[in-house]
Image (cartoon, rainbow, N blue to C red; front, side, top):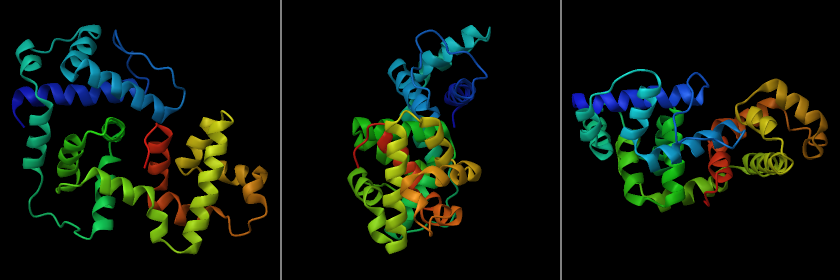
Length: 241
């Protein structure tokens, strides 16, 4: 990556991650109303993209008493950064080519960084097909079609067996109920895979109390390990799949 782009990009990742973790105050122009962690990330990411990454970096640096060269800020090009990241990806790495698997490779890569997941959600909300293709090239080394991805993720339980379909139907219902009841923290703990939260929730949830199969292992096998938490978060942020 070029030196000028690298300076701004690295500072952006650092500042944004620290703000999301509560380790850095928000710069002027940013605010977050949501108490849910993932919704907050998306809310902030949308504001950063509207503001522009160079301006976000400038404001964060200024608040911290740091100086970013103006020429680096002026020269920053997000599309060029994505293209450079693509070019720097190892060319001899094995690539899964089966359609279902390549979407999993894409999500695995995107979910490594909260900022990238927030960026994916923003792309889906804005229906930015070209931006999605560029992100998929960087994350999965192939151009994915946004509409095909929506169909796959929105209906992926239909590719599973009856046990998976039951688990997804029940847990999606439980999580949606929690969100409607204003219990986003419980929903977030379940989505993160917290076993104690699941055990406590199972003891009082009418959807699970009389479902013997609904163990924590069942939840992990058919929900947590199969990208349904990502799908739920995407939908919870207003994206239709």
